[in-house]
Length: 140
Figure (tube, helix red, strand yellow):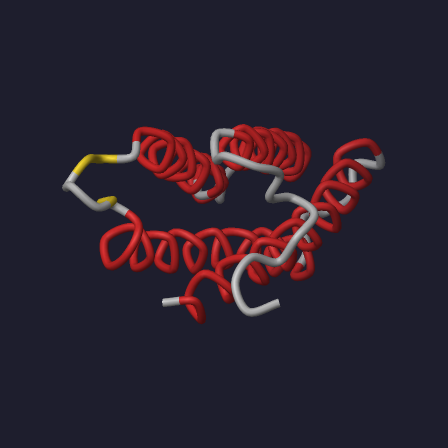
């Protein structure tokens, strides 16, 4: 199970890097009124895909190892983390609703969705005990 937690921790950083690149791309695209191109679709898809992978890894860890503590008590911070992250994944997939919108609106809405999703991720990580942002949890 340490492998899943380590992978979940590493993918977190990949997700943040893709989110930062997407924020720059979508902000420039919106402000410069650029056409919504292949790279914009790829960044949006990569961010959504990484969020899905994070959710899958999180579910595996939560249900296999993390849901119960000795004595069968639910850890509320893990449930809060899971709920917040599920909301973040839903928000990350909102850009699919704007496929037929004009390019400027698509850039703007996708930018806001990624920023909101990233803010939910930050909130979700802070719900866990200890400082988890600066470490890779697990094997390292």
